Length: 408
Image 1 (cartoon, one colour):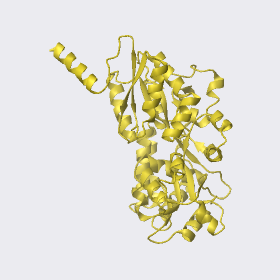
Image 2: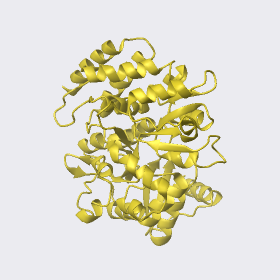
Image 3: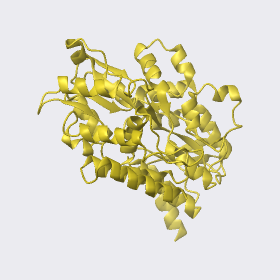
Image 4: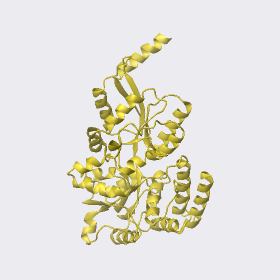
């Protein structure tokens, strides 16, 4: 029986073009997002060429972040040893670190090396003052705009919510071009969008230091009322079903004047084989007059599973992925915005410098082990208000009460 299984395995490996690993080869296992352009496979292959005794076995998971999170949690809870590394979304770190699943990486590099990363990218991988994740990208929400359309009327890009609304109403064309598109579907993208609007009105969701909840304050009600008012007026009625790609595609085909999205869209919009719009620009998300803009920090990075028997090999991989070669390659091939300050100091690309300036406003989401549950509460009630099932004030009152109960 065992001989049959071994023979079958050998045949499968040969058919797929793989060879069995020699006894002295360390295999690092990690679950990743879909690798549509093959960028990660090439990076891992280059790492293996430089480190012949280490191979990366990448499992391409589903596109949905929360589904991959569940897959990791199920494996780590079972103690199965399926993975040596976690390719972690920023919001996973507090939960995974609190559960004792992640290796503390704080002392793996000297402080000077950590200091080369944009501060928000390190803060997003920190829990209780210890670093558990090395970022692979600088990611934050920003406002894309049709520069060609604004130039036609001699208008600068909007700085305030009032200016955004006014320009949308001035430039939108019924049944042809909407004003402002964003992520209004009930999922994590809605949390990210709402937090930027909320912060721009001077409000806050949860204070990660003391657990204070700010959802039933006047600033939060003004923020949600603004988003609700946009639906069907200066945002399309269908925006409540939009995720990143739905909103991006509408904007790229000329169906909107303004778009809230992430940096990955920048390269796609500048690829004229894909985009049908004229010149575009980027600015921070708007805010109330006199207030600073807010950008929700996002993105992924690598953690080492605490129970992995291959921690040193895993760190070698992380160190390689953080090298100038790898971050530049992933930027060019996969659109990942580099997390290192030195990249922006050395580049002559004006578009990259503009992106870096916009991303100075990134703010991490609260570092809570209960983050997923808190976000689900927020999404559910904000969505209820956006679709007219609850008034903004009532939606926020309920969300605040449920959140306080959760945090207790």
